[in-house]
Length: 118
Image (tube, rainbow, N blue to C red; front, side):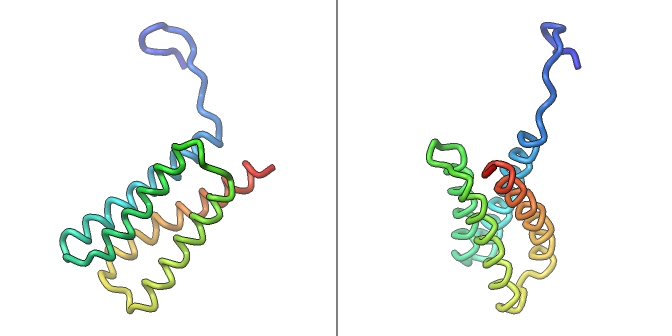
């Protein structure tokens, strides 16, 4: 594909780069929805959950990131999903939509964990 300014061919992103963007985008979406729910409902737990995903993205962009953090992110997301179910699935429609995004996030970060460990 030719670049718009130079006319030179720009390299296509690798599979790993695409997965990284999907992971960051889905984490930011989960964070935004939870912070928004916290603001609408007045429940600080949602804002805290959103902040954990924001912190995760900040950690990912820092030199402190290690591949094991992908596994921890998947575990964190799984635990939050179980807690949501055990709490009676409040805000069911929003929770299910976030659950779809969270599933994409977990599959993506576990794939990155496997590929970057080796």
